[in-house]
Length: 318
Ligand SMILES: Nc1ncnc2c1ncn2[C@@H]1O[C@H](COP(=O)(O)OP(=O)(O)O)[C@@H](O)[C@H]1O
Ligand code: SF4
Ligand SMILES: [Mg+2]
Image (cartoon, rainbow, N blue to C red):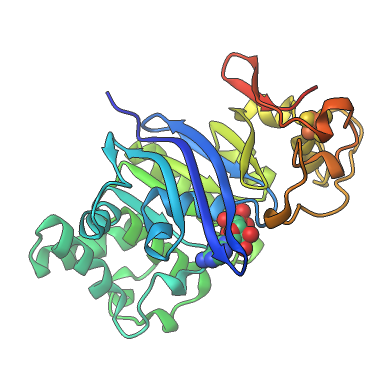
């Protein structure tokens, strides 16, 4: 049985004034069906580019992409853009940070959902609308029948986010990619949307990769956690392993930044400084300039992934 998602050696570089700048550097990840992976890391660490590459979006905007991406065993990077589009509609749901990037302001909500089903599932328009109605119920939009006829601008941010989740789930995709799906929302609405996503995931058995910088959210809904820094994955393990017993100094610092008890028992580690300029990466470990534990080899040799416990590894010389 193939995994929901298998990424190996993913490299993504964007063209800049002086040649290509690597923004994703050799990312590997695999996710079994029905599992939830949270992707953590500061802004600019390559989380969105990784997710967008999984469905072929970065290559389309001119990035240089190499490595292997398989969704349910299918080689995404080798697909032509039509097949990628079909994959995005029917097998991979994508929830973006800002719903208006995914919703078309000039079409009614119901029409947008029905269209997905007509295009990817060969539904008739009437079937599409009936399913759209059911999907709005599923994502708990009150007065679904009226909301079907609304334009996106007539809905609150929370409802638009739910509509986007409904569109992403329209074809029951086995894989859902959610890029900070709730950051645009108020705290209380965020929690509602997240709990809803988690319930739907459980109901439908969807595999989910979820980008967040909220560790509480990761602890709440993830089975597994991966941490990115400067385009690399630096730690990976079960949610418990990574959040309760982080091995990488960067992960520890990230956790230390959170004003929230109950995670690491270690004293608060401050995360000072900012991520490196990807066009001028330091030699050795990219985190070395900010790392309080840096020692001899850190400034010269890049650390490899090293297993700590079964299923838990970190990329650090310590
Ligand atoms: N379309 C693009 N063109 C050029 N650079 C980009 C583009 N998209 C992202 N980047 C760069 O790639 C790096 C990683 O970005 P991103 O994946 O969005 O980070 P995040 O972890 O915050 O989601 C950043 O340095 C960003 O500036
Ligand atoms: S390799 Fe060295 S600099 Fe990098 S995180 Fe580990 S201890 Fe810190
Ligand atoms: Mg992002």
